[in-house]
Image (tube, rainbow, N blue to C red; front, top):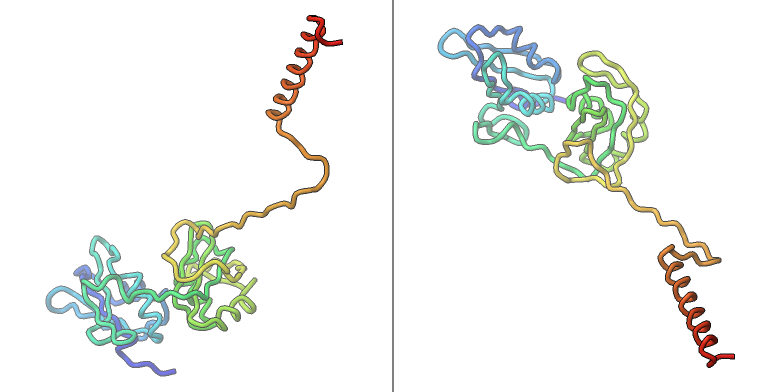
Length: 239
């Protein structure tokens, strides 16, 4: 599939004065295949344009690297004016890249290696279809949302117990399950607390049980009744 140049091209500004082309490649290689780096550092503050093979990788790079602290310099990473998915216009006041779309077609992932990032997870799950959202947590779990229901079902069928490799080379086999309670909510930060439905045990018919409090009351009533009878006998009113 061919993409327009502007969809795959991002702007990188506020770079340190001694930045090299290789340094920029090292900053962005993990988001996808970088096809070209155009570093401008001859006059004035340096800046660069980075081109990816896939526009989705460019979108991930903008999301992750805008505002990134590099050697004391806070990077400015955005799509050039008129570029990006859907004609997104970059700018300081537009947040950290294009807003993430959300979907109700969500899967839960477990067994991720410690170095597994949301970018790694997103790339892995793209085998099933278009991923619109991905996130990972410290406990080795993650969530992924697809644009289409069929892609979610395919991910559960084909990627469950699949071999996952992080950008640092760690390998694990992950489990992928449909999240029946997820979809479209805010980004979770604590591992995605799913609600647990309470289970009720059916009552058994038979001898009723009473609490100790009820038993004490019944014993007290019997004792009072007995004392009353003994009192009547002693007074000669009861034979």
